[in-house]
Image (cartoon, rainbow over all chains, first blue to last red; front, side, top):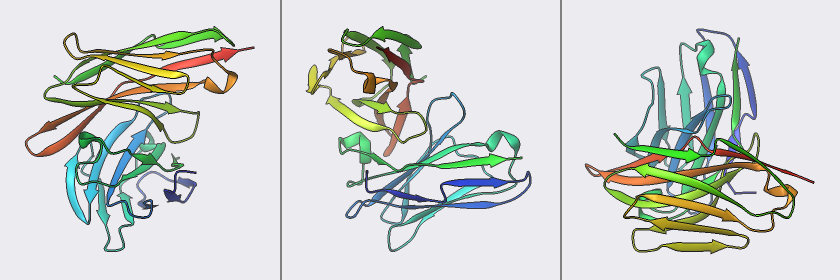
Length: 117
Length: 114
């Protein structure tokens, strides 16, 4: 158990809908990262927050948005869902502001499996 | 263009054998390189991390090497076990314009058979 929690575990929805994925980082971790992993694909970095502020942005679509709240939990909002958005969405956390770049370890949550029908 | 390429794409070995996974990268400016293990349907778990000045790092039966000159890394697994069956992901970090950039390889899928 990494200490990172994600809810829900599974989510099934229809095209055009909007969903919210939630992540609680490990106690003491200030950075939260979101990743997307489509079937048999590698991890795609979406976005990173540190202590409530956006710190890095990857291949995140405009239909997707995220935020980190004062209690450090984070939410990833996916809107106007398309079939291609079906994937595993992972959240990770780390202690430092620079996260993986400066060497502190990322701990991954169990993921949310999103299925868009 | 920042890229991380891993080889082989997949690998099957017998329990007890050794194997080596490769990672080549073209990432600049390089900050560090990590290897992760990802069991199917689960989040990745960090195995090793190496910065520019380090050329080898061990974690139990896993040993990672880094050649910053040739921009190559390898992950050597000794005396493989069935539980080593997983995807192994190489991740290279760069720092550009004040922002992190994490470049993930596609992974090597390892299957260890009895």
